[in-house]
Image (tube, rainbow, N blue to C red):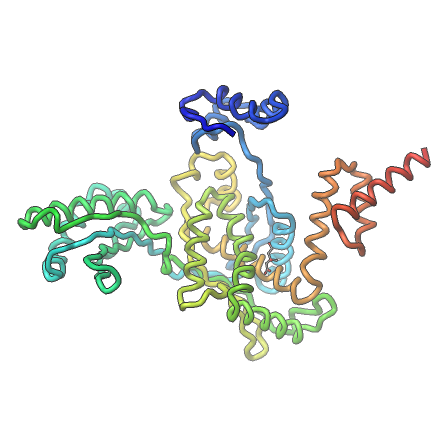
Length: 439
Ligand code: MEV
């Protein structure tokens, strides 16, 4: 590949041509990129504006997991995910728990955090003694930015000075806490922080300090929001779990609890375990136009907050009650960002009856717990491959252009057979040979 200059300045058509010309079959590739454009040009332009250097659209399945009962309310949950069996697993777990009282959920808090990182070469006492005064200026100086958010019930909750000099000479932070109501709040937080930095600079100058004493490094929100936290749980008497894959309820509950304990003890297992939680969470986060990278970064940091990375979910078996819970931080929004722009995101939110950000936190967490329950249930009973391979089989068959009839025959054949690319290929070859012979 040769180095390209000025790519971003090209028109979309030119970009498609430049990219396609690098393939061995440029005409076909160009057609393919274009074939994924939306027929409605206005809509297509809208999609293109989400990012830069856009040449096509990237399709992902938009699925639905019905029957999620959360706090006695029934939801149909939209999920965007490419991994087969995640939606099936979530739906199955939702149905299982609906029959046992459904999910319970509560939002513990929705606090967001941001920091101005700076160096201060003057006396520490200047900062500590003047911080109350500075705080007033921070609040006053950001009134225009916060007015709208305050009307909606949010705003800046508190501002602290953090002394980091024990870790790095002259390093301090202004750490601010926010409520952003139904928005994720990244723009609001960052705008306030940049204003704080300006106010700090002006204050220091006004007090006659040498301008070299203050060096603002950066102003940015933190994606670690340990107090933007939601808890979701399911529970029932152990007996009501019923027989699971031929395993008696008491044994199942105990084996399940051991699996959760392992995910608390061993980071290798914890990472996979938490990944299973994010299968559900991310699917809802994506379907509702939220930032899954922020949600994941936050959750994984939270999972290591006690010094070792561990499971986000927990289980207890006390007084004959099986209780499985997930406490997970996530900063979500239902206004702003993609929520107003992406037509399917709008539909996702409508499907969820236009939830508040708090309700969406509970729904996404319930999807996470559902997928975690389904995964650990399979792992501790039938094994994960049985269900996975069923879905994987469909993908393999599709990749071999199998007909509906061939798919149905393959599903029957592989009920108790091991699915691999070569075994499916062999099955299809045999099936097609037989058909030719019959013909
Ligand atoms: C696969 O996407 C997720 C699992 O590996 C989760 C787990 O192991 O708990 C099945």
